[in-house]
Length: 259
Image 1: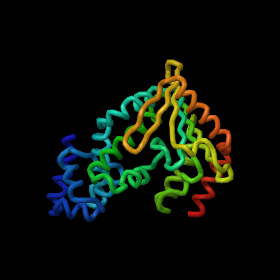
Image 2: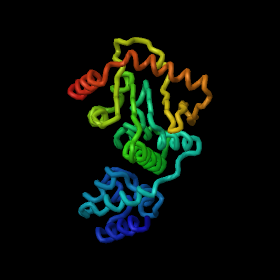
Image 3: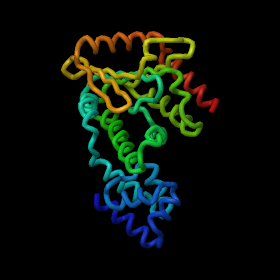
Image 4: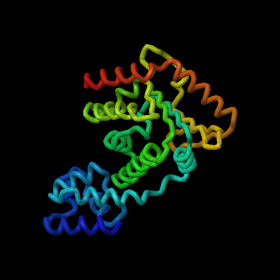
């Protein structure tokens, strides 16, 4: 990743500006610019684009950042087992009652989720990089899994208007990909079993199933047949009250128009 720091330092020297001045110009901290220049972090696409615009460097920083991101970043130990399952599963199913699932989050939405006041700028960028890499590893791999997402309608109303509108549009676009299914549980469904919390299910390439649950501190993979069966029954319940994909798409588009 040495190329990117050298490019940033050269461009900043030619411009005669400090790290703090660069950060202020693209609305990030000077310490984050320092992290880019010391290979501790790699700019995400939107940040790289703003840096290129500031320096007038075409797509030089964007291209270098994209190359650096291919090298990947370490994942939290408690999440590694599920990430490995995601990258080899034949089918994946996700239900969420409060947030757009990570695999479908736009960069701006993911950043707003991570920027909850509990993480510093460097931690946010690190976690964001991992999330974007995870999406690519699952959805853009050769022979990607069939992915089904069931979301409570409340999820669609989270976030500031500008971020939410882009995120909802992205949901519609994701649902148009082969093998990706997005369904919404309308408010009229009332109380349903999914109100207890988010979960995920994977059908393994070996034919078995695994589940995943996450709390405030960490997540865990469930392999015990009784628990996985319980999650599967809950999935059947929430998908039964969800709108079909086409009606879900229409509902999302209606919400886009209202923003």
